[in-house]
Amino acid sequence: MSNDNDEDLSMWDEALDEQAEASAQASEQAEAVELEELTEDDSPITGEEKRKLDAILDIPVTISMEVGRSNISIRNLLQLNQGSVVELDRVAGEALDVLVNGTLIAHGEVVVVNDKFGIRLTDVISQIERIKKLK
Image 1 (cartoon, rainbow, N blue to C red):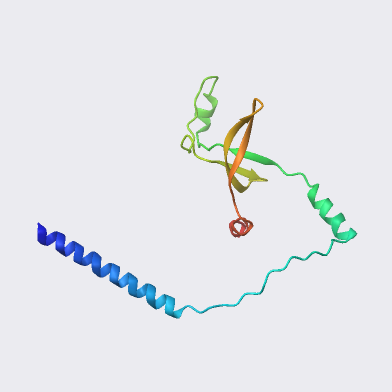
Image 2: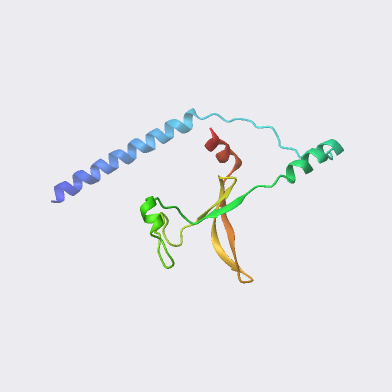
C-alpha cells in the first residue's frame, strides 16, 4: 500500500516538474511589447456630432429581465390554471439575465425598492463579448 502511495507521489512530482519547465520555457519566449500612452481627447464634440448622438440616445429599446425558461408541450400549457407551478431551468438564488432587445447585456439580482421590484446589476457583459456573440 505504501508503495502505491510512493508511486502516486512520484507521478505528481514528475507532472509538477514538467509544468514548471514548460512555464519557464514560455516565460523565456515571451517578448516585451511597448504600448502607446493612452491620452484623453478633451476636444469638445461639434454641434453635428451632438445632434447625431442625441438622435441615437433617444432610440427606444426593450429591456427585460429573465428569471428562467422552460419548454412545455401545448397540452401542458393549456392545462395551466391559477396555482399551477412551472419549473424553470434556473436554481433559486441564481442571477437573472438582463436583455436589451433580446441581447444579453448583464446579470443581476432581484431587489425591492419602495414596494416595487427592481434588479441590481451584478455583472455587465463587456461590449467585446456582446459583439463576439453576434458573429
